[in-house]
Length: 528
Image (cartoon, rainbow, N blue to C red; front, side, top):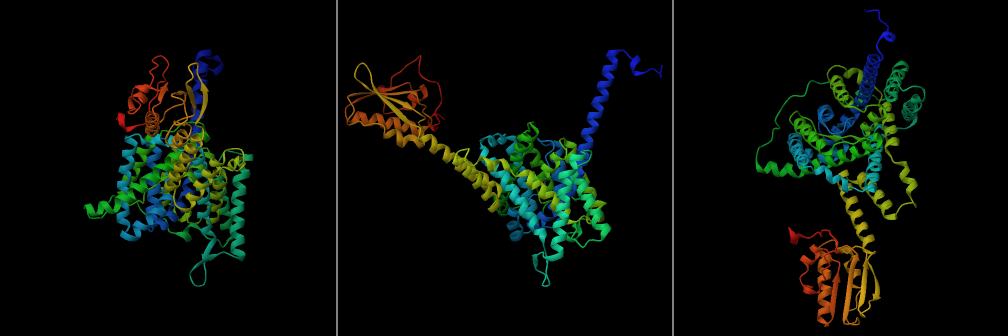
């Protein structure tokens, strides 16, 4: 019985057997991709976490612990499989002032409170408001982060001079650095044309490291930046006074940290959604980020959020599942505990080359071709968000972008208000409105009418216009009052029932058209 061939099995059972084998092999292939991609990401996480910790003014292990804990928790329970989270530059540049003024313990307390705020945001389902972020703001966000990642790598092209101050490399050190960076980028770019069995970034890092060791090249390594060896993170409640004074110190920072972390994470989800043609769960990610940061603050980590650079490395290396993020976090912990001497051998040039490839892949080059093909306002918003992201931080850039986009939208729609003027059979003058009536178009609406020179009977037709807000209601009320004062009759046709309810001065001048009036709601606090 054990010698039966597959051909001897009943066709139904044979198809089920083959389907099981196919599913098994597909699952193992996905796991292999996630595992290898996670290893690549872990190698790239080391210098980034160390660098961001130094920027924030805390010990490098605080950055590494944050990368491990935030990465592990969000990968396990977050709303976007394949997305990598950890210590980020967007948070580090805001943290530096808190650490400088009050010390690392206040930072850890602020990170705990940051996590609680993020959990609350997820529980209240505030992630849906990311739908209000326009596409030009998304382009500016992506291009701005690409610029930030690029600029962060330039510090690796500096080395201490005779006085101990950092100065730009020159001569042989610069040529060697550029050569290794170019070699790394070349391997990453061309290897996928030959094989995709292993992530090209991982091959590039191993190859360049081996080359540097074999030839004894005098180039800076991870070990020259910081020693990453250490133990497991230890639980410790932040050593700060539990007073209202402490709360008022950390609360503003915690709100800013939470806003930056959620904005960067939710926008990164949208970027990955577009690349993978899948859909992440924003509110779940908010809760996961909050849990991760609360835990991280209690274990001496500097907190974190989604990392678009490492996420792009992971996605392009084939890491689309949760196993990739979990592998990256556990591999990073293994580096800290057991393999720090090996990781410290990796040339900084190899990791810079990886990040330069990330920059090229992150920047939306197609946005340059949009110039002259889309409205100028959209181009301006995208460029503005890019510049503000580089100059300040992500949260400010997104808020500025949304605000400017809203102003541009309001201005463009305000210009659409117009009226077609006709006479009806009774000799009444008819203003047939076209375009939305809202706060920005009220000025143009008022200029359409001439109560002093109009006939005694005037009709304003709203069939092709929508009354959008309280400002529009007030404008209609004021118009009715203007015609009343000169003793003329004004008829307002085809207003929604809600509009009629809000009008005060128009009174019985509003004509009720029960079967034809539109049904829509007006943004006004009077109905609340």
